[in-house]
Image (cartoon, rainbow, N blue to C red; front, side, top):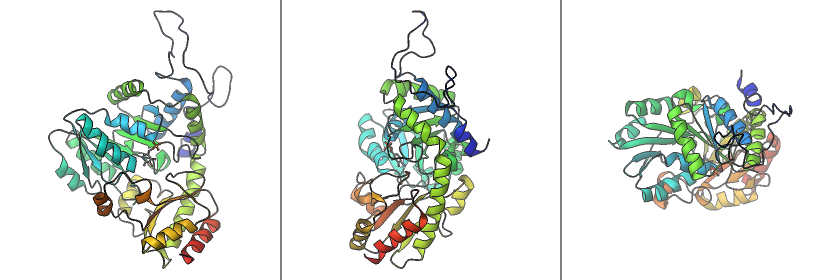
Length: 379
Ligand SMILES: *Cc1c(COP(=O)(O)O)cnc(C)c1O
């Protein structure tokens, strides 16, 4: 099946009891046992719930793995993944990651004796030289947030295998519709389903996929022990979002490409970051491992005052720290999603008050362009 068809015909394919075409919302915690010695297929909703299971099956099939797990948020999924490790373990984390992931890795994990080292994952040699005897895993994100830096998935997967490390990739920006890290040899894929998969800024959710039965047992244990599971109602909302992922993302991607090209021609903009642009660093690597450039872009204005005026003058996108929704969303990462980075790290990564992130929504190109133009001319 092609990618679009798979979005419709996997997992939540309805209810065998009634013929309902969408998997019903089993708003239910307990399932009665036929025999006190033998639980049925379902027992208690933290351990498993049919609506959640339908979503977990869908995301697993879409990512090309056998096992899916749904969590209460993207951060709950990421935290569970890191809690596979313990005192004395060393993990490598790409320094270009979501601010929440950075905060977890920087401030929380060391409390549990997990040593974290931030690395430039776009440079496999830098990753190789950071590996120590007690290194257990590497966590990456590509394209990265917010500068759209590209990490070579097969290269990192091969390097990790050579050293017996686990690989984890946050695939939120592209979704399995555009990129499937398991196919590149990555062990664990993680999503904030709050973004493109749900797609409507109305539901927090996190998803994990693996094809390894041992890792799957570990994640099941983490999921039921930590208890941050996705509720049945929210599982249903994300499963519904998945069905329109193709048309949303294709349209958003097309508009994003046109906007990126247009922004390049504007004298008020100094740099545009978008993997679809000919000059984007790592573009070639990106298109070896992904089916498209996605719909996230970032760009830079010459100074702080101009950037602030510009963002405040925009009328169509909402100013918010999220992405991947039907409405366009604009943010300034250094003030919003990336505040947990220490100032020196922000400087090193060139996250400053001139940098604007733009998540392209489903509005018409001409309206978004006109809006950007009026904001640029006035700032
Ligand atoms: C939003 C986001 C997260 C965190 O997800 P929540 O659902 O908000 O907990 C993690 N990674 C990336 C890339 C994100 O954009």
